[in-house]
Length: 264
Image (tube, rainbow, N blue to C red; front, top):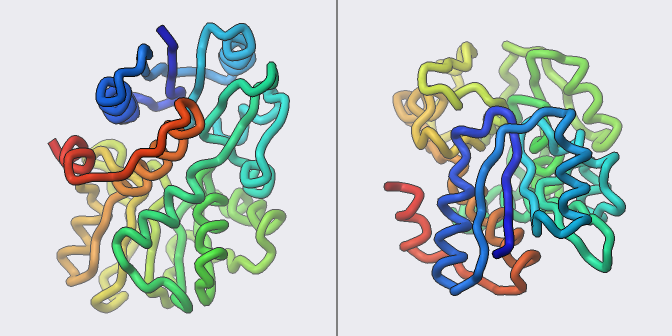
């Protein structure tokens, strides 16, 4: 039986095992997918286990998307551009790191039929998934991208990858059409983002990368003020779909059953 894992810290919130094991069973694959809380000290050994074929594939979440890169033999062009890896596999005895978050975000926006071209975007956070979101937004020809992070220096580092970014102080809210919460604030249900978004107007698009819990305070705030609110469920499904294809060479489509699985 093949073994797959998602690693992160925190990891309890991850629904990757639920989704991947659902697809594994549906396609009669002899495999199992689990989640594991990891530390920096675990990364080298986990990659070694892939090389030794004890683990067939890894998904990587917070805070290891960048930290895992030095242990890999090669990374894809997408991973190189964003310095972010979320899917790892063995190919011709080399451990390869790839980034499926870019497609995950882009396809989620297309699925929602949101017209994002020429829109002003504000991203909250500067962690591992943010370069992937910026790359996807750039592909979709948005007008501008501003980034705000509690530790401003981490946001400034993103300009090494994307020099057209505007970096704003935490608490400053520039005019935007779409605001994306890419922080971990909201993973605990009582988490509050502590930003004053009461005067941003209506019909703005609030997008939270967090998908579990389904409704964060960030999204509740959006709904109360008459704005559009969407969690990261579709991004999560689409990035997982791409990883599944890499590992199993099976093309899947998102259906209502898959979406309902995560709503239960």
